[in-house]
Image (cartoon, rainbow, N blue to C red; front, side, top):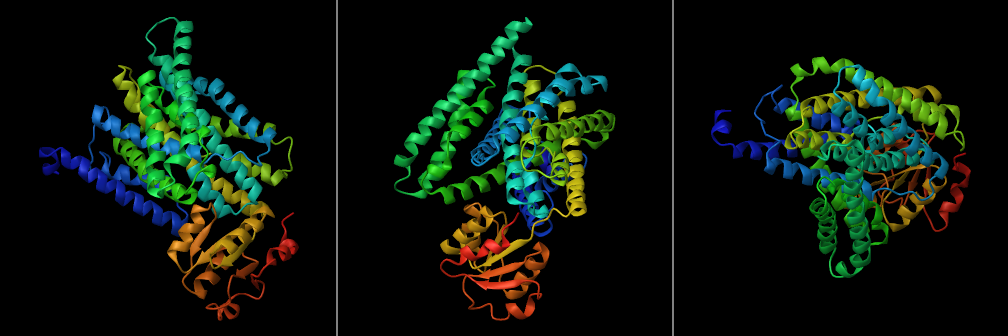
Length: 503
């Protein structure tokens, strides 16, 4: 520890090591036990910070660390925004989910915060950040719940849309507090102009990137990766240059305009940006948790619990209003009420603005980070526990189809199953094939022998295992329960899946 005191640069280097260790541990626990990555990352940050071993002591208010943190947040937001896909979404439902929840949160949550002792600045900023949800927490949770595909896609898309909306709202609120004009109306106009500048810069860069990406990527996929990263960082830097504190809005606007599905090397780009985002969010999570002192959180527990209670009430009202139209059963509506975790973007914004407040001479950064830390942790645990309970109580889990052997043909077959309402899991002996399937937005697992496929079939409640080729899986029929059917996959075989079609 004394070496770290004498050589401050070692704190940064050990911090980088800790981030990588935390990212690795989070990925392993997620894959093996379904533990949300955010919990593992925050725990590692707490263990390294002043409440734990105390060897990670970075001053996030310094220009260098603030710049590093800002770039990490940019990567997280850009990757999340690029994943938004509104095709085949029920417009009425997704529109009301994106409207009612944020409106209730912004209108009523500051009142709750003020009632429990938070300052006006902190209460309003907490409300703005709580508009966002947690798609990276919701994703693994939905994979474990195994709901019907349409419902899962709706909940995942809702989280991504609310993240984009929440970033813009949080930036607008922060801009209103940092405008130095004085009069409320003048401050509002100034904040609107700053946010508008970010939107204009982001839209223009996104449109330009969409038009030029094909020319930039004709030679190599490596150029595609660098070019996408260049676009995201440029959106942030140029928006900040045009109008300070509008960079995050520029990143979100740019990501919403770009569409990777029309670009070359789509699969490689998706894999690259997801890996980069995992590293960036690990950095953000660990740094936030390393600044938290558990001894100071005691005074914030009551306001944090009150905020969580309000968020639960807002979620119930939002789902009741948004699902008036649409083919949603009452058990599904109750389940939707339990999906309200705050995750990656909430942590990113909490860390970002907690470090920006002191730079503007404003107090409350520590309180903002502490309250949001408690809210994020509580909503994750409460949402996961209640969602699992409701799913089991009402029997909402859908049986999976396991497709053994990954190839373009089996990928098409898996997509056909998904279109019919099933959950399709691709398995293969080769890690490269599994990564290929995941880059195609399909669920895939490594299975090196028949025993592992049997284990996956039991875990997922599979009703059928589809073999791309019977070779190498001869003992599979002996190991599988009699209730699980085995089918070979041949030309036109997907037409025979109609008997399993989900209602």
